[in-house]
Length: 218
Image (cartoon, rainbow, N blue to C red; front, side, top):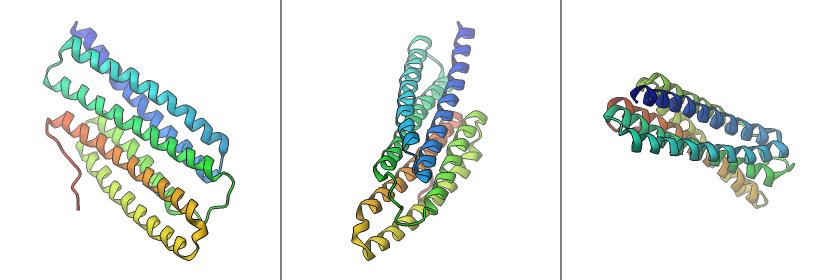
């Protein structure tokens, strides 16, 4: 029984990484669709998000079954609990990437009201944060978490710059209202994706130490 349980736990660890790869991929697709104004790719993002939803349901059910049938001891219970929370964060990353794709479809082929400079920077940092948060899980290395927390501050600062710049554009030209709102939402979605990456690191910290850890708020 223990051998079978260990096999199930190993497989669960592998599959959460697979879901993480899906989260990385969907964000990459959404940002590429935005920068290239690619309607077809944006539609693919929306369809791909359905696969992430299916994966979330499948993995959550397996976690619940492991808890109910195997009654894991403290350390393994912390791992399974952390994985359940990670599943939710990864699913939300999929949702937020889908939201970006929906805005891409809405903007269509319209010219951007400003060159997109800080938004791609936000996206690159955010994608790296997802990757590092998964590395944090694989290596059980809470030092990586501190790096992710610092990167989250970078994302927050870039969003503030985008917010200030877009409001200035709107102040000079009220006809830009619709796209200003759309670009602000995209920035906000990227900021939220970064937050979900920090959440994953917090879950890993709990899994490893049994203590709750949250990013320090300045």
